[in-house]
Image (cartoon, rainbow, N blue to C red; front, side, top):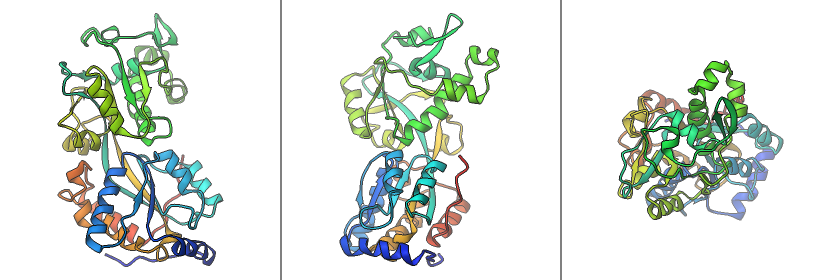
Length: 345
């Protein structure tokens, strides 16, 4: 591994020095999906070094970006996790607040899972179109674009059970929500005959097919995925939407819903046969490197083979690992504090 290099301004270092004087713990915010991986690295780091365990908060991807981009210094976190790439608007917020040197780490892949309680008696297999028609705010009804009237699954597909549509999912601040809208809702909308025959393009789909329904069939469950598990146990017919890692950790209580005949697992997510998969990231504030106690060592642990390889401890928790070639490129880039490219959207 190459040693880290630091190309930060004297002003940024001076601001970050205040943080070093004020706190000993590394501060990390961001995605609820990335949270268990970062928490695992934090625990491993503390066990290996005897240093204070980093403080890891699950704030959601959007919320984490806002906090992370707030500035440099003691009041601002060192790292944020994200279940999607940083947006241009977030990057510009960082730049405006003096967070001008950021490293991006794509740590692996995750599938967006739909799951039910193991007490559910049905074997579920949904198409992307089924998912859209069940959960979207607006759908085709008798040839018109209208508010979603469907209350039971068999109303949208007669092959599905005659049970109430009820899904617990992430809020708008979550990267999981962003990814689910893009990968499941938009893709399902594009499968509709109404959209195909109408010749509607991607801009139309993004404008008209992004809203989740708000009449009780889809319920925003916050950033705590454990609450979704509790609700699924209380109502076996309800479904939950979260990252594969959380399903993986709760297979004793939950079972996956197949999408287009494919079950989410490490193999189907890695080979992209599972249709709803996404990359996972974290972002490092490079002005805090070499200043915040133990931050460099923590990043080295996160980038270690023991954490990131296919047989590493993060894969044991559900992370789908990068190829060896991509992992080595990632490790070199992050440990060298390479600056991220400007996002394109």
